[in-house]
Each structure stands twice: as structure tokens, then as C-alpha cells.
Length: 164
Image 1 (spheres, helix red, strand yellow):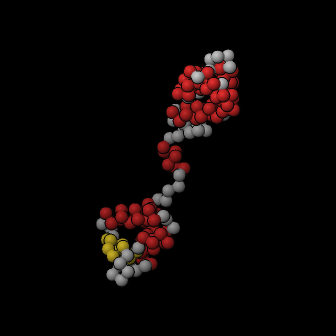
Image 2 (cartoon, rainbow, N blue to C red):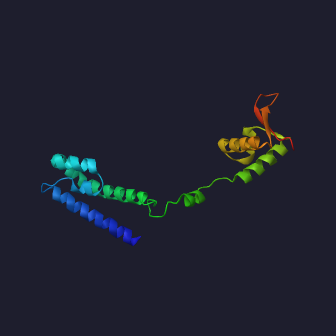
Image 3 (cartoon, one colour):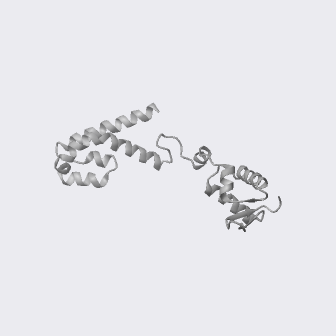
């Protein structure tokens, strides 16, 4: 982590030196150095956007350096803090209710409700989202474990657990 801060500091110092070169007539080098090719060429052709942009960049250089470093990390497959952004690691850290747990809760809810269940009843019982619950119920329908129909009294879409 200390090495990273040292490299960031070196890039920051180099950017300020290149910006200072702009006041000697070679404008935009600090922008080109930090990956801002379009505005770097604009600064080069317009004398640092008539030197106004050159002065403003004195305040913007730390952000340019941070953005450049972040983009380099992302291209290398690292997170902004330098940790590998492997999809498996990301998936392991994001909470996802397991389908098996949700399925068991849905079966328990249907059993408590006389063998039938609406999505709203299932959400209330499982504390899952509507999307998660409906997806789990539809997977059970496609697998042939339950059937879907309408409640004859209310007309609501109802999932019937015939084995219960």
C-alpha cells in the first residue's frame, strides 16, 4: 500500500512538472501524461486553452492522477483499492439468499397456508424480494413440483403445492 502511495506521489509530481512546462510554451503535456488525449491536444493547440485552462489544471491535477491510476487498476483487473476484482470473489462477498433456503421457506409457507401460495404471501413469509420469490416459484413450476393458476375467489395468481 505504501508503494502505491509512493507511485501516486511520483505521478503527481511529474504531472505538476509537465504543467509547469506549459507556462514555458509546451501546454497539455500533463493531460497527455494522465491519459486525457483529447483535451491534451486541445491544450497543446490553444496554449493551454489560452492559459486559463492551464491555471485551472493546477487544482485539477490530483483528480486527474487518481482517475488515471483507477483506470489502470481496472484495466489490470484490480478494484480501485488494488484488490483483484475476480468475479468469484465479488460473488462471494455479495449477499444472495440461497435458492434452497428460499425453496424450503416457500414450501413451509405453502404448508401453513393450506397448500397454496400467492407471491405476496410468499414475500411476507420469506422476507425475500418479489423478484426472488417469483423466480423461485417459477423454477418450481418449470420443474413440475407445483402448478400455477388463479384463485377462484380473488382471481390472484396462485401457486398450488399439490403434494402438501
